[in-house]
Image 1: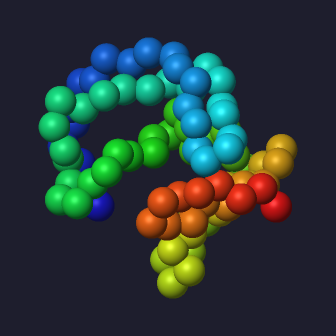
Image 2: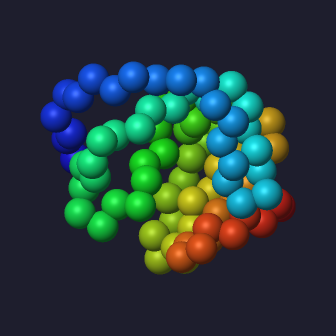
Image 3: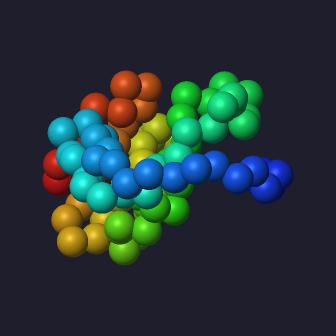
Length: 82
């Protein structure tokens, strides 16, 4: 999937995913949705903090693994530490 190049001003923020908080993450806010049905996008600033990122579509989960492992389940993405 391609997204047209859009310049977005970035800040460093803390990002909370369920019960997990990541600090000093590069974030940006788009003025409008880029994709239909979007409720926010996870970008490289956050995903690069993990050694492995797996989208398990059948289970409705995003699995983040690295220094620690974390699993987010949809639709509420209520974080469950493993």
